[in-house]
Length: 111
Image 1 (cartoon, one colour):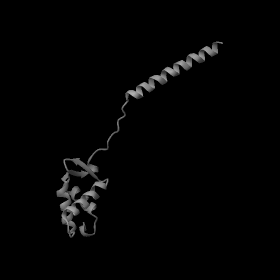
Image 2 (cartoon, helix red, strand yellow):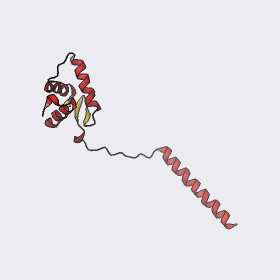
Image 3 (spheres, one colour):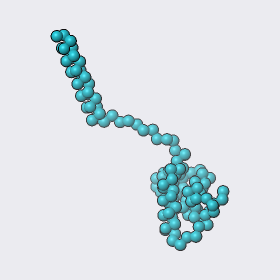
Image 4 (cartoon, helix red, strand yellow):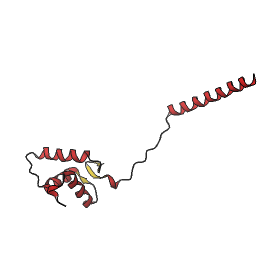
């Protein structure tokens, strides 16, 4: 890989894919800076810039405890629907009003 002509996030992606496991953010960022041979006037600023780029790129996944991995390593999240008390109440009242409507229609039809 041509590190000098690649973006910081592409280099970070390469590093993580080769490692095959999550890496502590500072170690990852420092390796990116090292591989890019990027002149650094302010190390904290350089770390912040690379970290921000990684954070904004959907290919990366925050694993917790300052560890970053790749999104592709994680199964997609399954959204579960939760029936709330309000939804249950709403469904119950809809059912009651439906029964009332049926009774009213029966009464009208009998006349």
